[in-house]
Length: 398
Image 1 (spheres, rainbow, N blue to C red):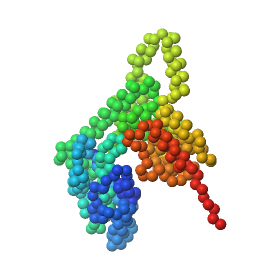
Image 2 (cartoon, rainbow, N blue to C red):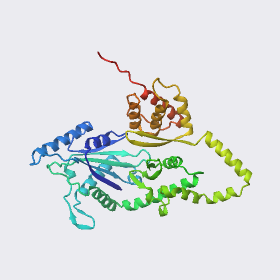
Image 3 (tube, rainbow, N blue to C red):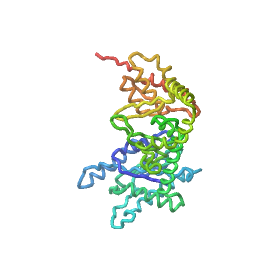
């Protein structure tokens, strides 16, 4: 099991995300009614904070007004778990966390223990959409029921230590060992991807990494050159600098790594006759130009960059469906919105459509159906993009 924790200033948004994310299940609430809306829960937390501040000499409210934790056991550790099992894990984590009052290996560094057990908090159960790994979200009031502030010093380190104590008690794999195994597995998968690539390019690499049920995020400079990337597995993120031996999967070395893996293939090609080789290269070049395997797009929305690779078949569907667009809507804007929808970036797609003069949102139930094929999903994304980007008619009042 792994865990992370931090003090945050956006408690309202954290509770709303914790309880209203798709397929989220409420595990437990403490000191709050269960049958009220997320924002109503946060309102009660803030009411408690304001009341406690009035009773102090210094009425200034705290800036980081909530504590947030994520607890993620391994998938195989929670097979056939009931809701009672998840409640017990949440209670155990909070109890162990509240008992930590010093840093591991530094007995002279002591701090005030938290009192989350006697604070207002909400626990929700989420399931990662790609890996299927279930994990808990806990959002707790920074002020406990006695009016004291829950100390946040080294709160992330304390969360990790609490998880390790529970791992040892339950005989589960320690977070350090799991991290090493994950790094090894991701590195092996990345090497296998490079071996399968006939030619290295970032769009195809990202597409194939995503196909392995990971998430990959590239970091580029102002000229568009990739300077780094990170791969997310479940709730953990691994930078390219720790993947592979001798950092051979970092952007500055990855193409050389690909070339080294294909040395034997290159020697085989060199042994072919010159005419056969030339003919093969010309044919491959022609096919690639006519039907590139992926179309890569970098779409900027609200200051964020989204790098998306569309299969050629999906791009063809968009070209067909977006030909007859509404008057006043640019084809390029429709394509961007449809692409964001296809990749699952609903908030970005909604924001992009609004900037084009449209309005509305796909709704909370929007998404790809479990048994839906890629073409039908692409058609639905194209139609939704046209609807989102349709200009809003505004009546001018006199």
